[in-house]
Length: 348
Image (cartoon, rainbow, N blue to C red; front, side, top):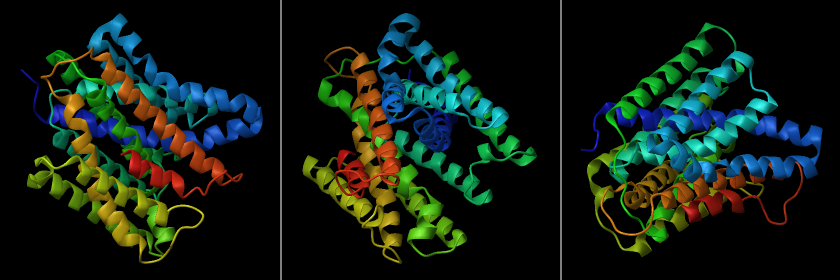
């Protein structure tokens, strides 16, 4: 039997939120690391930590599927706790990125048996809570703040995630199907989805600055987009079979819209608002469609570690897009940095 109930959804939501928090606090630390150590040293190290997700098949072989879930998600929650206690540091950022990449693969192990819609719903709900927390701290992540308020937020995320993880581990692993490489690569969609959320779609600071809105109004805009995404997922429309070309069209629209509002040559003003709102719906729908195959229980094909590789590719794509976008603010890239959020939409 596939374990059901709020614990699995809470596990996905909390993991997604903590992943976003981890990537956000790690990015400036990786930037400082590059300044101190030099690009020649920093570049291979940063690439290596984002490749950590590809260790998932080895972890699965040694510790089993439950061990992979415990290692990926458990280590991520521990890093979040340490970051609050020690404040973000370079070594912690490197460790956080590595376990974050592994947690992406573990996420698909913990969600196995859910529908793609259920997976996407939990992910968007987790990001909604994370966005509300950021706005409560004036867009600063609580990890950068001291005091009882930030600590309470940290403990809520970590304790809820730990309880959901324990519940999932106690229920036993869900048997994995045989999968083809084509189906397994659907797990890579989480990477571009997360990159878009961190850069644009779930960032009130971005909406406020690019859309020329107040922070309160920017939060309202993000909430409207997330609310419509959740409503669309709950409506049943997202589970309807559609031709592959429709999904390609949706991803193209998402990529063009993201490229138009984020980057050096981006448009600003009120035009940002509809792109963010519609982009939330498109991103959630495409994640749900892409996640159907890697989460299903029935199928024929190769070993489950193909899904691990697909999810690890998604974790790597998060790093490629976010790091490249951040580097573009310091030195010019061979192409306009608008192409990076656009690429995320197209890849999704």
